[in-house]
Length: 105
Image 1 (cartoon, helix red, strand yellow):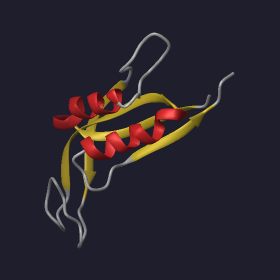
Image 2 (spheres, rainbow, N blue to C red):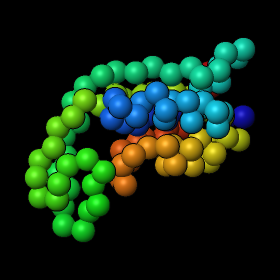
Image 3 (cartoon, one colour):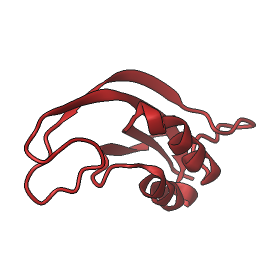
Image 4 (cartoon, rainbow, N blue to C red):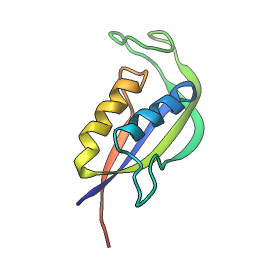
């Protein structure tokens, strides 16, 4: 079975709820452990353009806020459920995430 690495950023204020949601969907399962993830804190920067409906910030103005980069693994059989949970629990209309297929050696 293939595994995937999911990496995304989320405002620090929503990080715990988002980690919980994706964990409940099956992300972060490693052997006899569940809800496994790694977090790096940093500053997110963005400028909502015309037509955006920003949760945080205003159209046309630069925004900076504390965000967390979350990394976790998930099995191929749950990856769609995990992405659906991410979309439902994440506050942004556009979510910055990477999904990488992993090699097992």
